[in-house]
Figure 1 (cartoon, one colour):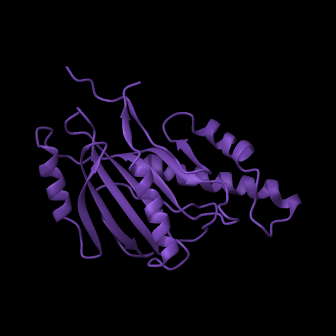
Figure 2 (cartoon, one colour; figure 1 turned 60 degrees about the horizontal axis):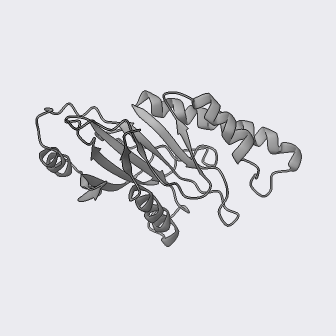
Figure 3 (cartoon, helix red, strand yellow; figure 1 turned 45 degrees about the horizontal axis):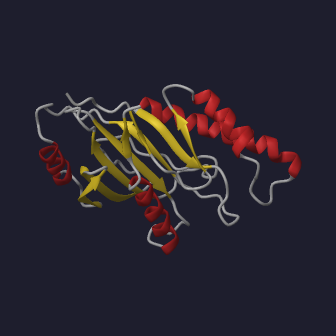
Length: 219
C-alpha cells in the first residue's frame, strides 16, 4: 500500500525564507527579524533600523494571517536584497478545497480547471514532481474581482504598502497517492512596476525554477 506524503520540499533562492502558517509562525518571524534581516534598504538611517524591522514583522504577520485564513500552509518571501534591491515578491503554498469527486482522475480535474480560465490569463498543462499539474498565469489590478479556485499570493508587504497591479502565477498540483487532495502554489509580484518588463519576467522565471525543485516528502 502506497503511503501519502507527509509534506513537500522546495529549494529556495538565496535570501528567501519560509514562514510556516500552521505551527511555528511566531518563531519563524523572530528568526526573520533577528537572524535574516541584517541589512535594511539604503536611505534608512541606522537609528531607524530596528523600527524598520518591527514594521516589516507587523506587515509579514498581517500577510501570514490572511494566507492562513485562506488555507495557507507556508508563506515564502525574500528578506535580503539582491544587488542592493529588495525584491517585491512572495508565494504561498496552500491546501485547495476543490470539492471534486475523490474518484475523479487528476487529468479530468485539471482539464476542467484549465477550461475555467478567464480571458485575462492563460493556463497550460505541466508536470510537477513527475505528475500532471496546471500552471495559470494572469495579471491582477486593484479593485477588480478575480475569482479563483485557490487563495492568491500577496505581494511582500514589507516593501509594498499599497495594492498595485501584480503578475501572478498559480500552480495546481494533486497530492501524490491521496485522491481528492490538492495544493496550490501561488506567486505574486509587481515586478519593477511594468508587468511585461524583462525584470518582471526574470522574477517569474525564478519562481518557475523554484517550483521545478518541488518534490513530496515522506519523512
